Image 1 (cartoon, one colour):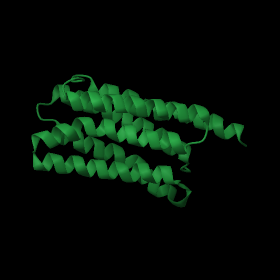
Image 2 (cartoon, helix red, strand yellow; image 1 turned 60 degrees about the vertical axis):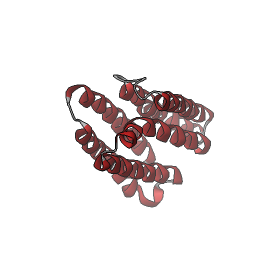
Image 3 (tube, one colour; image 1 turned 180 degrees about the horizontal axis):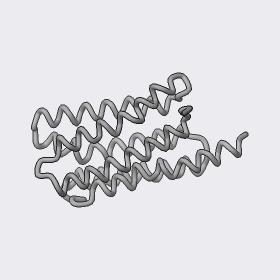
Image 4 (tube, rainbow, N blue to C red; image 1 turned 180 degrees about the vertical axis):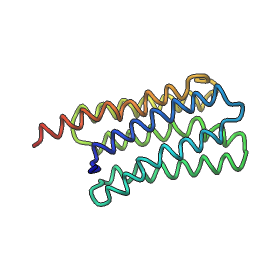
Length: 173
């Protein structure tokens, strides 16, 4: 199988969506699910990070920024979990991921080609920023469905971009 940026985008969208849905599930079914969530995310994010490494020089700066930022955010989550500092954990497992999405999608909106792709990522950035503000003001605001919201505003935009990217590339050939 040849790894393309299109394939990588699909994997990012799938792994992020599934990992957030599993996070929500673990939150409702496990009494202390932080460890399960961390290892689920580690396994899920290994897929696109390893695919990025496999792309090597064919990967653009955007792909490398997402891969590097994901590794750093995951490391922060592990550190917060190890420190067992409740305020840091509240930030790390709630607001951080909305802020991460807001920054990442804003950057993506700036650098991707195609008007519809830029609009998709700009909208995702705004929704993530709104989520971050709401969760920073009250970490229980989205309790019970926070990770479903994150799956919708982070994973789904990447999945929607798969056909948009293909369409944009076809128009420019």
